[in-house]
Amino acid sequence: MQRDHREQLNFSWQANADAWTAAVREQRIESRRLVTDAAILRAILACEPKRVLDIGCGEGWLCRGLMAHGIEAVGVDASVPLIETARAICSGQYRVCGYAELEEQAPLLGKFDVLVCNFALLDEPLAPVLTTLHKLLSPGGVLLIQTIHPWSSRGQGQYQDGWRVEHFEGFGEGFAEPMPWFFRTLESWLTLLAETDWRLQWLQEPLHPESEQPVSLLLLLKSGLK
Image (cartoon, rainbow, N blue to C red):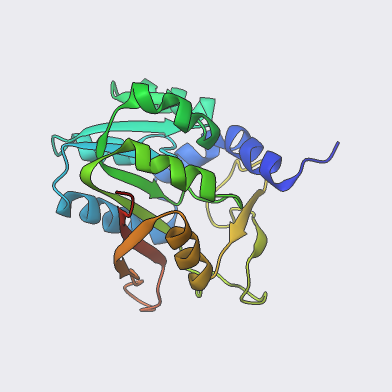
């Protein structure tokens, strides 16, 4: 039976957990090694938070980096194998929790100075989770989103919203399942965030040090809810 895009997206993170963990911990992904890991960590530290929620934390690298700076970091991810891997290397706070469970888990998770979605918003219907995130934010807190840069990642296709497929080429061995992900133009990102009551404070486009082309899109947002 063929899975739809969302089912395959979730399944890929279960099936590829070991391969993804190896790729991250061995720094196989050039864009992360040279640009994006440092970009998101630097942006978070600039906010001087006491408590951070990493949404889609994967194997926990960002939480570990934040804890090394004395910040309380909580990681949530829908992938059971990835959360188990995160817990095995670090005694931090990790929970198995997908987007659909965030609202239910909000009272248990508490409030955070910074919410982080680092290459984690890959699905098509994101309005529900972006709306839920308001409930997890401390007064004066911010949401940081780092995502694939719309222009540099457009590939050979048209510059319009739609499902694409990641085959993890160049990430090393062990990736058993392709990963569908939903491509958004910059206009679509900004429209979606405005519709879910997030106010853009600044936007960055971290550049590759050699090609000087944008590698990611980094957004800092504040809640527009009263």
